[in-house]
Image (cartoon, rainbow, N blue to C red; front, side, top):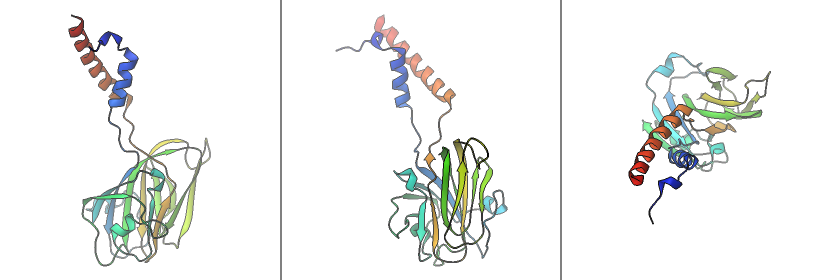
Length: 224
């Protein structure tokens, strides 16, 4: 049976194009880690250390985005162990991919500084980080959690609402800075929802216009 392009509506073409458009993984963050001499507070975003060459760079992904920030090490072991182990000393199910460097040094992760980056989609409510030691959280470059000092395991939250809270609902690029500075355990868990980068509407428009034009040309060939 021959395909009739006359039967293809514009809406059908658009649906096919959108389905064919590649989508970014919604459950991935990128990270860098610096193994430093003894330090205490997490350096603020823009500090010179973040411009230096990290000890390792990596991607972390997980089919369950809500479980992605679920890291724990009870023995201050390797970087790999910290990033692939969750609360309860069990596998967190994350896929860890090193871009540069790898698990490092016999000194484990003590005096390590982490930078995690990704995109989050926030709705009204409370988001909580459990951490040991300090962390700073930036949303679109604005500091919303300032808890950068050494601490035993503690919970730090921020709230999202229409006005008067730490942030309003919406999508944000986030930078999470975390440090392990005074020995085990190391812990970082959060209910921060993750999303992939959303293509600009103009991207879809250009992509769709081009393929629709191609479909039209093929249709004209069939009609003629």
